[in-house]
Length: 107
Length: 118
Image 1 (cartoon, helix red, strand yellow):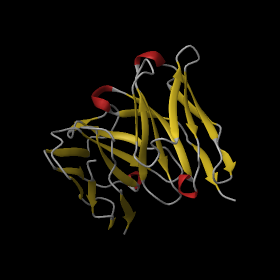
Image 2 (tube, helix red, strand yellow):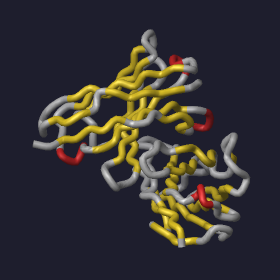
Image 3 (cartoon, rainbow over the protein chains, first blue to last red):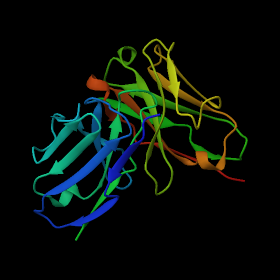
């Protein structure tokens, strides 16, 4: 199975900050990497697919990059509604493993 | 409106069985792979299973392989998860999700809670 490791596990940031979350795969997954946002008590929401493509309706302050084993989710200017937990998921092979999540908290 | 609604969760004793349902509406159900994902209280997302459009290909996480069975009824636009030999660590919110382009999980249900406890 492919293991997905996110870092950091949590971070504190202020509104307007630039935030970067990384996700590393235990083997190459090309660009088969998606990012999700989850708010407390809610279902996850798709943000980024194929490592760098923005899902329709998602604000342009979100961006993704990377290929192979190392990936990044960036929020260019953190907004109040962005405080949430973010997950990466590989779709290169089954089982379709998720990272452990990164919680973005208010500083 | 594209919608997924899970049902069937509840309190069950260890070793017991439970069947979850996921009713789909607002899209052509029989043209999409479907997935189950779970989340234990205070923990992260864990992929559980997926099924192809015809119900002939099913994948499972190692943790549920041999105990859980995913199925679908395309005539009823419904996805199922039969859970057998339930254990304490199966306690979680179970989400169904629709697979979209690029193997994304683009639509999620609201989740149904399963609690395994004596």
